Length: 190
Ligand SMILES: [Zn+2]
Image 1 (tube, rainbow, N blue to C red):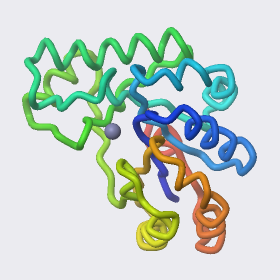
Image 2 (spheres, rainbow, N blue to C red):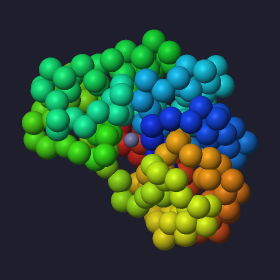
Image 3 (tube, helix red, strand yellow):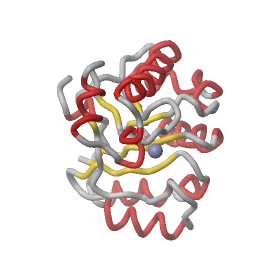
Image 4 (spheres, rainbow, N blue to C red):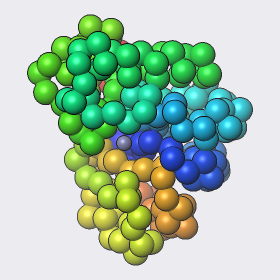
């Protein structure tokens, strides 16, 4: 099983292409989204059926991609709550208890503040497509070849179009390795 998670959403068209990829390939994904990016509202109708069916799970990545360790406890709660409210009102699902701290920055204090509003499971990763900044198509294929392995949580990003040009190769890798894609809810009981 492979948990392919994808974050942010700064490029609206990449969101659309990822949703199309999921729909046509059956790939199960978890999106850790920042509601401050307009693409989430723009493509809400496209995404909704996949969220409703559970094929794409939504997790909280804060409203504006804030470094939680730089915020007060009140600020941490505010960033998570605003994004939580956006996800609930837009998609009708409750992302708790899963959230991903932006940049992976967290400590005991940020964990406690998040847990105070039900976000008890910070989700890190073990393997990255490293495309939070621009990468070439070949770099993404190479990283997928390195990291698409059983029992791995992979992180990718909805920020730059290169990954959308290699969906076919990534999907083939999953098939060739006999992997099954899973969301967090597929693996962990709430
Ligand atoms: Zn992020």
